[in-house]
Image (tube, rainbow, N blue to C red; front, side, top):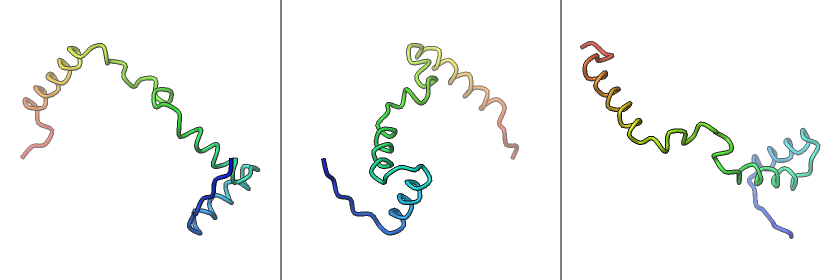
Length: 77
């Protein structure tokens, strides 16, 4: 499949530089960028959503933090 892109001078210069540094074609750089960008966010951060099945616990933690903040302000007027 053939796709044509219109890039500004600076972006194209960056693309050429990256392709030369990686010893790849410009098309290969763009294809790799597309693959890396399309990955789901969960793969990048395994901690994300760790407490999704514990909403009551998160509520308790937030309430405790707000109480502590009200009782012990970090800034003294």
